[in-house]
Length: 448
Image 1 (spheres, rainbow, N blue to C red):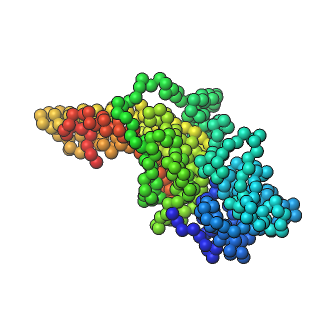
Image 2 (tube, rainbow, N blue to C red; image 1 turned 135 degrees about the vertical axis):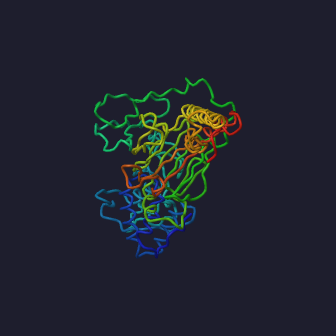
Image 3 (cartoon, one colour; image 1 turned 120 degrees about the horizontal axis):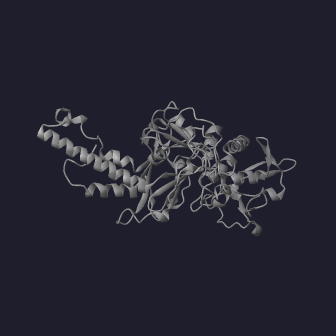
Protein backbone atom coordinates (compact mmCIF):
# COMPACT_ATOMS: atom_id res chain seq x y z
CA UNK A 1 0.00 0.00 0.00
CA UNK A 2 1.29 3.47 -0.85
CA UNK A 3 2.53 5.60 2.06
CA UNK A 4 0.09 8.19 3.38
CA UNK A 5 0.98 11.82 2.64
CA UNK A 6 2.07 14.26 5.33
CA UNK A 7 0.90 17.79 6.04
CA UNK A 8 4.08 19.17 4.43
CA UNK A 9 3.25 17.61 1.04
CA UNK A 10 1.76 19.66 -1.77
CA UNK A 11 -1.99 20.27 -1.55
CA UNK A 12 -2.85 18.34 -4.70
CA UNK A 13 -0.77 15.37 -3.57
CA UNK A 14 -2.79 15.22 -0.34
CA UNK A 15 -6.06 15.69 -2.25
CA UNK A 16 -5.24 12.83 -4.64
CA UNK A 17 -4.49 10.52 -1.72
CA UNK A 18 -7.68 11.42 0.16
CA UNK A 19 -9.73 11.03 -3.03
CA UNK A 20 -8.75 7.37 -3.12
CA UNK A 21 -10.64 6.83 0.15
CA UNK A 22 -13.94 8.39 -0.85
CA UNK A 23 -17.00 6.15 -0.66
CA UNK A 24 -18.92 7.56 -3.62
CA UNK A 25 -21.61 9.50 -1.76
CA UNK A 26 -20.94 12.59 -3.87
CA UNK A 27 -19.96 13.01 -7.50
CA UNK A 28 -16.26 12.81 -8.22
CA UNK A 29 -16.07 16.47 -9.25
CA UNK A 30 -17.90 17.67 -6.13
CA UNK A 31 -15.83 15.46 -3.82
CA UNK A 32 -12.59 16.75 -5.31
CA UNK A 33 -13.66 20.39 -4.87
CA UNK A 34 -14.77 19.74 -1.28
CA UNK A 35 -11.56 17.92 -0.33
CA UNK A 36 -9.38 20.49 -2.05
CA UNK A 37 -11.17 23.29 -0.20
CA UNK A 38 -10.70 21.56 3.15
CA UNK A 39 -7.01 20.80 2.61
CA UNK A 40 -6.29 24.40 1.66
CA UNK A 41 -8.06 25.66 4.80
CA UNK A 42 -6.02 23.30 6.96
CA UNK A 43 -2.63 24.15 5.43
CA UNK A 44 -2.06 26.71 8.18
CA UNK A 45 -3.10 24.20 10.85
CA UNK A 46 -0.63 21.39 10.25
CA UNK A 47 -1.61 19.36 13.32
CA UNK A 48 -5.26 19.24 12.25
CA UNK A 49 -4.30 18.38 8.68
CA UNK A 50 -2.20 15.51 10.04
CA UNK A 51 -5.22 14.38 12.08
CA UNK A 52 -7.39 14.40 8.95
CA UNK A 53 -4.85 12.40 6.95
CA UNK A 54 -4.47 9.88 9.80
CA UNK A 55 -8.23 9.49 10.26
CA UNK A 56 -8.99 8.98 6.57
CA UNK A 57 -6.03 6.81 5.55
CA UNK A 58 -6.47 4.48 8.54
CA UNK A 59 -10.28 4.38 8.29
CA UNK A 60 -10.54 5.68 11.85
CA UNK A 61 -8.50 2.85 13.34
CA UNK A 62 -6.01 5.35 14.84
CA UNK A 63 -7.07 8.11 17.26
CA UNK A 64 -7.32 11.55 15.70
CA UNK A 65 -8.00 15.09 16.91
CA UNK A 66 -10.71 17.49 15.83
CA UNK A 67 -10.40 18.82 12.30
CA UNK A 68 -12.04 22.25 12.28
CA UNK A 69 -13.17 24.94 9.89
CA UNK A 70 -14.84 28.24 10.71
CA UNK A 71 -18.62 28.12 11.17
CA UNK A 72 -20.57 30.23 8.68
CA UNK A 73 -23.52 32.44 9.59
CA UNK A 74 -26.13 29.86 8.55
CA UNK A 75 -23.95 26.89 9.53
CA UNK A 76 -23.73 25.61 5.96
CA UNK A 77 -20.73 25.22 3.68
CA UNK A 78 -20.86 26.14 0.00
CA UNK A 79 -18.95 23.92 -2.44
CA UNK A 80 -19.26 24.08 -6.22
CA UNK A 81 -22.47 26.10 -6.01
CA UNK A 82 -24.10 23.75 -3.48
CA UNK A 83 -24.71 24.33 0.22
CA UNK A 84 -24.74 21.72 2.94
CA UNK A 85 -23.75 21.09 6.53
CA UNK A 86 -19.97 20.61 6.51
CA UNK A 87 -19.80 17.59 8.81
CA UNK A 88 -22.45 15.85 6.69
CA UNK A 89 -20.66 16.61 3.41
CA UNK A 90 -17.38 15.03 4.54
CA UNK A 91 -19.09 12.12 6.28
CA UNK A 92 -20.85 11.32 2.97
CA UNK A 93 -17.58 11.50 1.07
CA UNK A 94 -15.54 9.29 3.38
CA UNK A 95 -17.93 7.11 5.40
CA UNK A 96 -21.62 6.84 4.57
CA UNK A 97 -22.54 7.57 0.93
CA UNK A 98 -26.31 7.55 1.58
CA UNK A 99 -26.18 9.68 4.75
CA UNK A 100 -29.06 12.07 5.56
CA UNK A 101 -28.40 15.37 7.32
CA UNK A 102 -30.16 14.47 10.60
CA UNK A 103 -28.46 11.10 11.12
CA UNK A 104 -25.20 12.19 12.77
CA UNK A 105 -24.37 12.27 16.46
CA UNK A 106 -20.96 13.41 17.68
CA UNK A 107 -18.79 11.24 19.91
CA UNK A 108 -18.20 12.39 23.49
CA UNK A 109 -14.58 13.44 23.06
CA UNK A 110 -15.29 15.77 20.10
CA UNK A 111 -14.83 19.35 21.40
CA UNK A 112 -16.01 21.21 18.29
CA UNK A 113 -18.94 19.10 17.10
CA UNK A 114 -21.48 20.81 14.86
CA UNK A 115 -24.23 20.56 17.51
CA UNK A 116 -22.10 22.35 20.13
CA UNK A 117 -22.49 25.66 18.24
CA UNK A 118 -18.82 26.63 18.58
CA UNK A 119 -17.18 29.20 16.32
CA UNK A 120 -15.28 26.33 14.70
CA UNK A 121 -16.89 23.13 13.44
CA UNK A 122 -15.23 19.70 13.52
CA UNK A 123 -15.54 17.88 10.16
CA UNK A 124 -13.54 14.79 11.13
CA UNK A 125 -15.93 12.05 9.92
CA UNK A 126 -14.64 9.70 12.62
CA UNK A 127 -15.79 12.09 15.35
CA UNK A 128 -19.40 11.29 14.47
CA UNK A 129 -21.61 8.24 14.71
CA UNK A 130 -24.56 7.46 12.51
CA UNK A 131 -27.99 7.18 14.09
CA UNK A 132 -30.50 5.80 11.61
CA UNK A 133 -34.15 6.72 12.07
CA UNK A 134 -36.46 3.69 12.43
CA UNK A 135 -38.88 5.05 9.84
CA UNK A 136 -36.25 4.90 7.11
CA UNK A 137 -36.30 1.13 7.15
CA UNK A 138 -32.50 0.96 6.89
CA UNK A 139 -30.41 -1.58 8.73
CA UNK A 140 -26.63 -1.47 8.48
CA UNK A 141 -23.48 -1.83 10.47
CA UNK A 142 -21.85 1.51 11.15
CA UNK A 143 -19.00 2.04 8.72
CA UNK A 144 -19.66 -1.25 6.91
CA UNK A 145 -17.87 -0.88 3.52
CA UNK A 146 -19.98 -3.65 2.00
CA UNK A 147 -23.16 -1.60 2.33
CA UNK A 148 -24.49 -0.70 -1.13
CA UNK A 149 -25.83 2.82 -1.63
CA UNK A 150 -29.32 3.24 -3.04
CA UNK A 151 -28.20 3.88 -6.60
CA UNK A 152 -27.07 0.26 -7.00
CA UNK A 153 -29.83 -1.40 -5.04
CA UNK A 154 -31.85 -3.94 -7.05
CA UNK A 155 -35.09 -2.22 -6.14
CA UNK A 156 -33.88 0.98 -7.80
CA UNK A 157 -32.82 -0.33 -11.19
CA UNK A 158 -32.80 2.06 -14.12
CA UNK A 159 -33.33 1.12 -17.76
CA UNK A 160 -31.27 3.10 -20.28
CA UNK A 161 -32.72 3.20 -23.78
CA UNK A 162 -31.05 4.12 -27.09
CA UNK A 163 -30.78 7.70 -28.27
CA UNK A 164 -30.99 6.70 -31.91
CA UNK A 165 -27.52 7.98 -32.81
CA UNK A 166 -25.36 5.84 -35.08
CA UNK A 167 -21.79 5.04 -34.07
CA UNK A 168 -18.88 6.57 -35.89
CA UNK A 169 -17.05 3.23 -36.07
CA UNK A 170 -18.57 -0.19 -35.70
CA UNK A 171 -15.60 -1.71 -33.92
CA UNK A 172 -16.44 0.03 -30.66
CA UNK A 173 -19.80 -1.25 -29.51
CA UNK A 174 -21.91 0.90 -27.22
CA UNK A 175 -23.96 -0.60 -24.42
CA UNK A 176 -26.70 1.77 -23.25
CA UNK A 177 -29.00 -0.36 -21.16
CA UNK A 178 -29.44 -2.23 -17.96
CA UNK A 179 -30.84 -5.68 -18.56
CA UNK A 180 -32.21 -5.94 -15.04
CA UNK A 181 -31.09 -7.85 -12.00
CA UNK A 182 -31.21 -11.64 -11.93
CA UNK A 183 -34.71 -13.04 -12.17
CA UNK A 184 -36.15 -9.92 -13.81
CA UNK A 185 -37.11 -9.64 -17.48
CA UNK A 186 -35.63 -6.71 -19.42
CA UNK A 187 -37.88 -4.30 -21.21
CA UNK A 188 -38.02 -4.73 -24.99
CA UNK A 189 -38.71 -1.34 -26.54
CA UNK A 190 -39.08 -0.51 -30.20
CA UNK A 191 -36.15 1.35 -31.71
CA UNK A 192 -35.16 2.91 -35.03
CA UNK A 193 -34.01 0.36 -37.57
CA UNK A 194 -31.47 2.78 -39.02
CA UNK A 195 -29.45 2.96 -35.82
CA UNK A 196 -26.21 0.97 -35.87
CA UNK A 197 -25.91 1.00 -32.09
CA UNK A 198 -25.89 -2.54 -30.78
CA UNK A 199 -29.01 -3.10 -28.67
CA UNK A 200 -28.16 -5.82 -26.20
CA UNK A 201 -31.60 -6.01 -24.57
CA UNK A 202 -32.94 -7.55 -27.79
CA UNK A 203 -30.86 -10.67 -27.36
CA UNK A 204 -32.75 -13.79 -26.31
CA UNK A 205 -31.38 -14.87 -22.99
CA UNK A 206 -31.69 -18.56 -22.20
CA UNK A 207 -33.06 -18.96 -18.66
CA UNK A 208 -30.74 -20.95 -16.44
CA UNK A 209 -33.56 -23.34 -15.58
CA UNK A 210 -33.62 -24.57 -19.20
CA UNK A 211 -30.03 -25.84 -19.06
CA UNK A 212 -30.04 -29.66 -19.12
CA UNK A 213 -27.63 -29.86 -16.23
CA UNK A 214 -24.02 -29.12 -15.30
CA UNK A 215 -21.60 -29.13 -18.24
CA UNK A 216 -19.00 -30.88 -16.10
CA UNK A 217 -19.39 -33.86 -13.80
CA UNK A 218 -16.50 -32.61 -11.70
CA UNK A 219 -17.07 -30.34 -8.68
CA UNK A 220 -16.43 -26.65 -9.33
CA UNK A 221 -12.96 -25.23 -8.58
CA UNK A 222 -12.27 -23.67 -5.19
CA UNK A 223 -12.16 -20.25 -6.90
CA UNK A 224 -14.44 -19.29 -9.77
CA UNK A 225 -12.16 -16.55 -11.09
CA UNK A 226 -8.76 -14.97 -10.68
CA UNK A 227 -8.18 -11.30 -11.50
CA UNK A 228 -4.86 -9.71 -12.44
CA UNK A 229 -4.42 -5.93 -12.51
CA UNK A 230 -2.19 -4.23 -15.09
CA UNK A 231 -0.91 -0.75 -15.80
CA UNK A 232 0.06 -0.62 -19.47
CA UNK A 233 1.92 -3.92 -20.04
CA UNK A 234 3.02 -4.42 -16.43
CA UNK A 235 1.15 -6.53 -13.88
CA UNK A 236 0.80 -4.73 -10.55
CA UNK A 237 0.23 -6.56 -7.29
CA UNK A 238 -0.73 -10.17 -6.76
CA UNK A 239 -3.52 -12.06 -8.50
CA UNK A 240 -6.84 -11.76 -6.68
CA UNK A 241 -8.78 -15.04 -6.43
CA UNK A 242 -12.53 -15.09 -5.88
CA UNK A 243 -13.84 -18.06 -3.83
CA UNK A 244 -16.59 -20.18 -5.36
CA UNK A 245 -18.82 -19.51 -2.36
CA UNK A 246 -18.69 -15.79 -3.18
CA UNK A 247 -20.79 -15.26 -6.32
CA UNK A 248 -20.17 -11.53 -6.57
CA UNK A 249 -16.97 -9.49 -6.54
CA UNK A 250 -16.39 -5.75 -6.83
CA UNK A 251 -13.24 -4.30 -8.38
CA UNK A 252 -12.95 -0.66 -7.32
CA UNK A 253 -10.42 2.13 -6.89
CA UNK A 254 -10.57 2.28 -3.10
CA UNK A 255 -8.11 1.06 -0.51
CA UNK A 256 -10.09 -0.79 2.14
CA UNK A 257 -10.78 -4.41 1.16
CA UNK A 258 -13.29 -6.36 3.22
CA UNK A 259 -13.30 -10.11 2.82
CA UNK A 260 -13.11 -11.96 -0.47
CA UNK A 261 -15.71 -9.91 -2.31
CA UNK A 262 -13.69 -6.72 -3.00
CA UNK A 263 -10.52 -6.19 -5.00
CA UNK A 264 -9.39 -2.66 -4.10
CA UNK A 265 -6.98 -1.37 -6.73
CA UNK A 266 -6.30 1.83 -4.80
CA UNK A 267 -4.09 -0.04 -2.34
CA UNK A 268 -1.70 -1.34 -5.02
CA UNK A 269 1.61 0.53 -5.35
CA UNK A 270 3.83 0.65 -8.43
CA UNK A 271 7.23 2.37 -8.40
CA UNK A 272 7.06 2.61 -12.20
CA UNK A 273 3.56 4.10 -12.30
CA UNK A 274 3.08 6.65 -15.06
CA UNK A 275 1.22 9.94 -14.77
CA UNK A 276 -1.48 8.58 -17.10
CA UNK A 277 -2.06 5.58 -14.83
CA UNK A 278 -2.09 7.80 -11.74
CA UNK A 279 -4.77 10.03 -13.24
CA UNK A 280 -6.88 7.16 -14.56
CA UNK A 281 -6.83 5.39 -11.17
CA UNK A 282 -8.45 8.43 -9.56
CA UNK A 283 -11.47 7.92 -11.82
CA UNK A 284 -12.05 4.20 -11.23
CA UNK A 285 -14.23 5.03 -8.22
CA UNK A 286 -16.78 2.30 -7.48
CA UNK A 287 -15.46 0.32 -10.42
CA UNK A 288 -17.39 -2.72 -11.59
CA UNK A 289 -19.23 -5.62 -10.06
CA UNK A 290 -18.79 -9.11 -11.51
CA UNK A 291 -21.53 -11.60 -10.77
CA UNK A 292 -21.39 -15.37 -11.26
CA UNK A 293 -24.70 -16.88 -12.33
CA UNK A 294 -25.48 -20.56 -12.71
CA UNK A 295 -22.56 -22.86 -13.42
CA UNK A 296 -20.34 -20.21 -14.95
CA UNK A 297 -22.12 -17.31 -16.69
CA UNK A 298 -20.78 -13.86 -15.81
CA UNK A 299 -22.59 -10.51 -15.71
CA UNK A 300 -21.01 -7.07 -15.26
CA UNK A 301 -22.47 -3.94 -13.71
CA UNK A 302 -20.58 -0.68 -14.22
CA UNK A 303 -20.67 1.16 -10.88
CA UNK A 304 -18.11 3.77 -11.89
CA UNK A 305 -18.96 7.26 -13.08
CA UNK A 306 -16.89 6.47 -16.18
CA UNK A 307 -17.39 3.82 -18.84
CA UNK A 308 -15.44 0.57 -18.90
CA UNK A 309 -14.31 -1.25 -22.04
CA UNK A 310 -14.59 -5.02 -22.38
CA UNK A 311 -13.19 -7.68 -24.66
CA UNK A 312 -15.83 -10.41 -24.64
CA UNK A 313 -16.27 -13.20 -27.19
CA UNK A 314 -19.84 -13.63 -25.99
CA UNK A 315 -20.71 -10.00 -26.82
CA UNK A 316 -18.86 -10.37 -30.12
CA UNK A 317 -21.18 -13.21 -31.07
CA UNK A 318 -24.30 -11.42 -29.85
CA UNK A 319 -23.43 -8.37 -31.94
CA UNK A 320 -22.61 -10.41 -35.03
CA UNK A 321 -18.87 -9.77 -34.90
CA UNK A 322 -15.92 -12.09 -35.35
CA UNK A 323 -14.31 -13.26 -32.09
CA UNK A 324 -11.94 -10.63 -30.75
CA UNK A 325 -13.01 -8.12 -33.41
CA UNK A 326 -14.76 -5.57 -31.17
CA UNK A 327 -14.21 -3.53 -28.04
CA UNK A 328 -17.45 -3.16 -26.09
CA UNK A 329 -18.09 0.10 -24.24
CA UNK A 330 -20.23 -0.35 -21.13
CA UNK A 331 -21.70 2.88 -19.80
CA UNK A 332 -22.11 3.83 -16.11
CA UNK A 333 -25.10 2.00 -14.61
CA UNK A 334 -25.25 -0.64 -17.35
CA UNK A 335 -25.73 -4.26 -16.35
CA UNK A 336 -24.99 -6.86 -19.01
CA UNK A 337 -24.00 -10.44 -19.59
CA UNK A 338 -20.42 -10.75 -20.83
CA UNK A 339 -19.73 -14.49 -20.63
CA UNK A 340 -21.79 -17.60 -21.36
CA UNK A 341 -20.27 -20.89 -20.18
CA UNK A 342 -22.38 -23.04 -22.52
CA UNK A 343 -21.38 -21.03 -25.57
CA UNK A 344 -17.73 -21.10 -24.49
CA UNK A 345 -17.87 -24.89 -24.03
CA UNK A 346 -19.33 -25.36 -27.51
CA UNK A 347 -16.66 -23.14 -29.04
CA UNK A 348 -13.90 -25.01 -27.22
CA UNK A 349 -15.12 -28.39 -28.46
CA UNK A 350 -15.71 -27.16 -31.99
CA UNK A 351 -12.32 -25.48 -32.35
CA UNK A 352 -10.40 -28.23 -30.59
CA UNK A 353 -11.88 -30.93 -32.80
CA UNK A 354 -11.42 -28.78 -35.90
CA UNK A 355 -7.75 -28.36 -35.02
CA UNK A 356 -7.42 -32.09 -34.41
CA UNK A 357 -9.08 -32.99 -37.72
CA UNK A 358 -6.95 -30.50 -39.65
CA UNK A 359 -3.78 -31.79 -38.01
CA UNK A 360 -4.73 -35.38 -38.82
CA UNK A 361 -5.45 -34.49 -42.46
CA UNK A 362 -2.15 -32.64 -42.65
CA UNK A 363 -0.22 -35.59 -41.25
CA UNK A 364 -1.91 -38.01 -43.66
CA UNK A 365 -1.19 -35.74 -46.65
CA UNK A 366 2.46 -35.35 -45.72
CA UNK A 367 2.86 -39.07 -45.09
CA UNK A 368 1.31 -40.11 -48.41
CA UNK A 369 2.73 -37.30 -50.51
CA UNK A 370 -0.72 -36.85 -52.03
CA UNK A 371 -3.10 -33.94 -51.73
CA UNK A 372 -2.74 -30.18 -51.29
CA UNK A 373 -1.05 -30.49 -47.94
CA UNK A 374 1.85 -32.49 -49.28
CA UNK A 375 3.49 -29.55 -51.10
CA UNK A 376 2.65 -26.76 -48.63
CA UNK A 377 4.98 -25.54 -45.88
CA UNK A 378 4.11 -26.96 -42.51
CA UNK A 379 3.43 -23.45 -41.16
CA UNK A 380 0.54 -23.03 -43.61
CA UNK A 381 -1.20 -26.28 -42.79
CA UNK A 382 -4.00 -26.92 -40.34
CA UNK A 383 -6.12 -24.32 -38.59
CA UNK A 384 -3.34 -22.69 -36.61
CA UNK A 385 -5.32 -23.12 -33.38
CA UNK A 386 -3.29 -23.68 -30.25
CA UNK A 387 -4.09 -24.20 -26.59
CA UNK A 388 -3.49 -20.50 -25.92
CA UNK A 389 -6.17 -19.66 -28.50
CA UNK A 390 -8.62 -21.89 -26.67
CA UNK A 391 -7.64 -20.38 -23.32
CA UNK A 392 -8.54 -16.93 -24.62
CA UNK A 393 -12.13 -18.10 -24.85
CA UNK A 394 -12.06 -18.45 -21.05
CA UNK A 395 -10.70 -14.97 -20.34
CA UNK A 396 -12.25 -11.51 -20.08
CA UNK A 397 -10.26 -8.30 -20.40
CA UNK A 398 -11.53 -4.95 -19.19
CA UNK A 399 -10.01 -1.45 -19.10
CA UNK A 400 -11.09 1.40 -16.84
CA UNK A 401 -11.75 4.96 -18.02
CA UNK A 402 -9.75 4.68 -21.27
CA UNK A 403 -10.69 2.52 -24.25
CA UNK A 404 -8.65 0.99 -27.03
CA UNK A 405 -9.16 -0.17 -30.60
CA UNK A 406 -9.78 1.57 -33.96
CA UNK A 407 -11.62 4.49 -32.35
CA UNK A 408 -8.77 5.34 -29.97
CA UNK A 409 -5.08 6.20 -30.17
CA UNK A 410 -4.46 3.10 -28.04
CA UNK A 411 -4.54 0.07 -30.35
CA UNK A 412 -4.05 -2.58 -27.68
CA UNK A 413 -5.40 -2.99 -24.16
CA UNK A 414 -1.75 -3.01 -23.08
CA UNK A 415 -1.64 0.65 -24.10
CA UNK A 416 -4.38 1.58 -21.61
CA UNK A 417 -3.34 3.05 -18.23
CA UNK A 418 -5.20 0.53 -16.03
CA UNK A 419 -6.96 -2.72 -16.88
CA UNK A 420 -7.75 -6.16 -15.54
CA UNK A 421 -7.64 -9.69 -16.92
CA UNK A 422 -10.20 -12.16 -15.55
CA UNK A 423 -9.57 -15.90 -15.82
CA UNK A 424 -12.74 -17.97 -15.44
CA UNK A 425 -11.83 -21.23 -13.75
CA UNK A 426 -14.90 -23.32 -14.59
CA UNK A 427 -14.36 -22.61 -18.29
CA UNK A 428 -10.66 -23.46 -17.96
CA UNK A 429 -11.66 -26.66 -16.18
CA UNK A 430 -13.91 -27.59 -19.11
CA UNK A 431 -11.09 -26.83 -21.55
CA UNK A 432 -8.80 -29.17 -19.64
CA UNK A 433 -11.47 -31.89 -19.75
CA UNK A 434 -11.89 -31.51 -23.52
CA UNK A 435 -8.15 -31.68 -24.15
CA UNK A 436 -7.72 -34.63 -21.78
CA UNK A 437 -10.48 -36.56 -23.55
CA UNK A 438 -8.86 -36.11 -26.98
CA UNK A 439 -6.53 -38.81 -28.29
CA UNK A 440 -2.95 -38.15 -27.32
CA UNK A 441 -0.37 -37.42 -29.98
CA UNK A 442 0.53 -34.73 -32.45
CA UNK A 443 -3.05 -34.17 -33.58
CA UNK A 444 -4.09 -32.25 -30.49
CA UNK A 445 -4.05 -28.44 -30.47
CA UNK A 446 -0.45 -27.38 -30.03
CA UNK A 447 1.02 -25.59 -27.05
CA UNK A 448 2.17 -22.06 -27.87
